Image 1: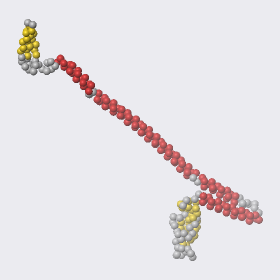
Image 2: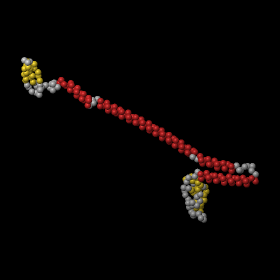
Image 3: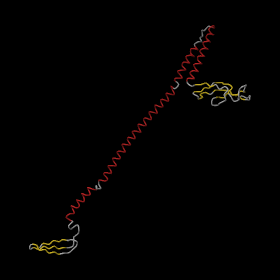
Length: 235
């Protein structure tokens, strides 16, 4: 007789089977531990299947930090390239700004040096007239030639004055004629006071000692004047 121990749901049952003259008995006993029973032969397969399911659905914990580290490295490389690009742009901008500053400074210096080039060119013509006028005088001139010489000098001086006025007007230089104007400390330099005469109002310019000039409306030299007052007192 062969006996098999089968445990199922904790039931105790004895079954006697008679098959072909033989006796088989199945003795039911207390069920063993679940891991030791009928699930034990399938534990390896079950674990393998569970492992395959885990690998197919969720990645192992070891790959998580690696992927995150790779993402951070890629981001760091990208940011480093952006920093290099911005640094290069900044360096180029600084270089361009420095070049512009140097060119501007050079232009300002050239303007200071050659800004009066046109004015000087016109003054050269005045110098030519003055030189010719001075050449009219000679040590060996006869007394009867003095009258002719004075006429030539007068013509030269007249031409010189006309040329100077033309040059001044061309470059915006204007002579002030303040006689009769009210005293202005921004345009006039007071030399002294003088008693107001007939037709002269007190506080106005009565006499000009030295002419003043304006360049494009800006006073570049004050006119030295005497101002009329009511009293007889002088400074």
